[in-house]
Amino acid sequence: MLSVGIIGASGYTGAELLRLLYNHPQARVDLITSRKYAGKPLGECFPSLGGWDLTFESHEDEAVLARTDVVFTALPHQTSMDVVPRLLERGKRVIDLSADFRFNDAAVYEAHYGPHACPELLAEAVYGLTEVRGAEVARARLVGNPGCYPTSVLLPLLPLLLEKAVCPEGLIADSKSGVSGAGREASLGTLYCEVNEGFKAYKVGGHRHTPEMEAQLSRTASAPVRLLFTPHLVPMDRGILSTIYAVPCEGVTAQRVAEIWREFYRDAAFVRVGKGDALASTAYVRGTNGCVLGAVDQAERGRIVLLSAIDNLVKGASGQAVQNMNRMMGWDEDLGLRAMPLFP
Ligand SMILES: NC(=O)c1ccc[n+]([C@@H]2O[C@H](COP(=O)([O-])OP(=O)(O)OC[C@H]3O[C@@H](n4cnc5c(N)ncnc54)[C@H](OP(=O)(O)O)[C@@H]3O)[C@@H](O)[C@H]2O)c1
Image 1 (cartoon, protein in one colour):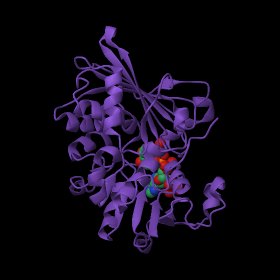
Image 2 (cartoon, rainbow, N blue to C red):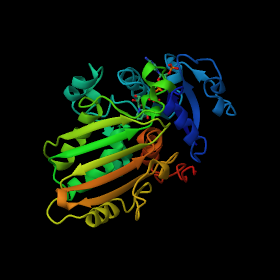
Image 3 (tube, rainbow, N blue to C red):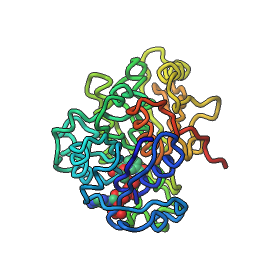
Image 4 (cartoon, rainbow, N blue to C red):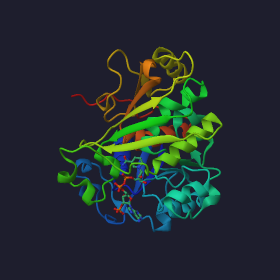
């Protein structure tokens, strides 16, 4: 049985890691940490998980960091970078859910997030979009788990750029996320009355996931790619729906796009193409590691519309992190992750 630790287990992605790992047949959670809840039982932080006999510890204790085999760091950006090197020094394999290890270029990270404490680790960190970088993930000591919006945008776009089915110029992504995407830390902007019965765009033209997506799109296209990205906040708990507008290359139709996706993801357990009118909805993936894709022709307007739905806390964070752990261990990528969405 693999011994697993979660650093920053008192947040939303920490709770989701716990929920998913509870049923994992090969991994056992032996360590959970929190500053606020150190010494307290899991149920005090998450009453819904109160049936599980685990107690929070402090990640400042070096003996605690030495204990498990694989560690998930579910901390804010600019915080993971202080803990991850200490884990690697102790021979752990690490999957970091923050943005701290998603960029290979320290200058790009620093332009958007602030100074990096260990830029020397960025060259070896693998961007953990499992379906695309799975072979590198399998060998990795350190995985930078992708952002939630980037996962929803890159899964549809990367195969199409590789196949030269859409033009790298003029890409637009309009994404809508549930409120859990902002984390569990109390803040004015996520209070019930601030988000309920409203639907707003935010960080227009300035969201930090834009450079993350542009780096991965450019890597795939082997040329600089720009993306016009607008995120929106929807008054629901979880889920992301991305609507992407692209210019199709000569003769490329929605049918051809679906064929490319089916071929590219033929061995992927979690990505599927929606059928008929059931193109993509957050309801089709809620609580699961799935991603549902859809495409609609708009040839008369010189565009193709691509749709992508994920659960931000699962495929957009903790589920993809477990999927990466499975790859790192040489197990089936869907081990412990097979699930049907909640319905209704
Ligand atoms: N929410 C999502 O949908 C999502 C999706 C993809 C990626 N992510 C990324 O995943 C990471 C975790 O997100 P989340 O939504 O779980 O956040 P969260 O709910 O705010 O939880 C953050 C966790 O980090 C701990 N923490 C906060 N500040 C800390 C500090 N200065 N030093 C040490 N520990 C600290 C908190 O624990 P205590 O305060 O109890 O110590 C808590 O356990 C973030 O980097 C986020 O950007 C989130």
